[in-house]
Length: 481
Image 1 (cartoon, rainbow, N blue to C red):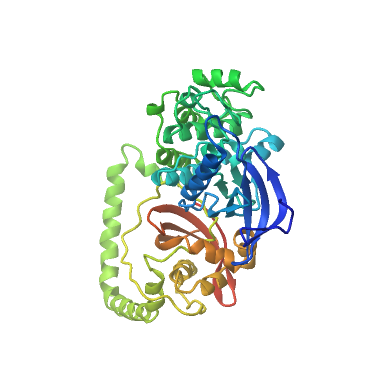
Image 2 (tube, rainbow, N blue to C red):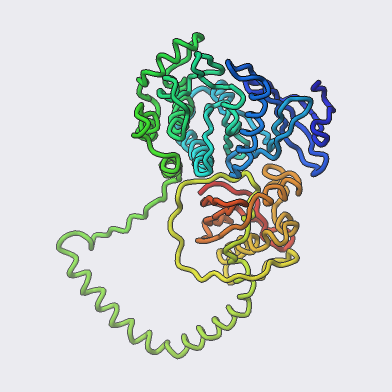
């Protein structure tokens, strides 16, 4: 029985039906204990040759628990694995979203830059899964969810083999579509990390070219034969993504990059180009360098006298400025906390390795028990940087104060309730904030390293927009740098 309002596992209330797939049926639900919205999936126990139903059920529960170990901002989290009336259920993070498959169906081919931005997020989540020993086995557009703010998340981690969704058995049993299989999997080998890389390449290829690399056929066996040959049609619309796609889709598993390398490459390609100022002048041409050097020497000599005369006044000014700076330093020091859980919403997405942080001295202090207005800074840029550090310093000691430093717009799109916010941070042990730099307007860029409960970490580079809210700078948006 799966009527709306049914209570599953004595805790989760079924709500709106969301869809049915090869793996199971999904509903929107309510966790009546934590008062948060969740997604509930009842897994299909598809018969598999030589496997009694009880074995399939036990395997589904085991694989679900394995998937629950993965905690990453770009992976749909598995909160719970339960059994109700003999059926295994997954309790997952609910994300208002559209699948990449739907987007492709509606819009056709996507631009390479957009695909790279999606790919870097999915690859980062898959890299984290691989570090945890989890093979996805079913990377495809239907399992990539896209939120309105550009966040991409991979779903259905670690369940495909347990549920019999895309498994080729010794007897030839096939379920699901093989269009995104790696050639070695189509030939009957077990899926592993390398086949996940190929499937990611197939997914991105489909987004750019409008069809999977081996096409689509109603006859699954014929398609499997074609996939097993490993001969794809070279991408014709990938632009700068073409070399990366061809690496991911290499028919030789050992020649493919690992998922972390794929994430780094996609992050590089999706990063906005930094404008370079033209600093060349006519004096840089051959024959004028010596003259320019003599001119600079004359200027230096003239300026030296001015510097000497100003030294006394400058020394007094610097000393008084230093004293003024130290007067407000306690707020800055507290905000440079290096091991506090990140103040993001839980829907932020990882990128490849960020640039090394500038040498800084980070100090630690206990998080403030209240969200006080930011102290005035000497300039707008410094105020923005200080506000972002101060926000992260509140985590995890004062999540309520941290939540108050998010604007209503941010909450509405990223973390609608405090319970959602709290649930996200419960998965994090600590966070490191570094290389905080103010940019144009009210933007700040920072490197964030998340440390997960149970081990593991991921580093991301984000751009934040801050706005004035009740005398305090609050976070209004967050995206990848």
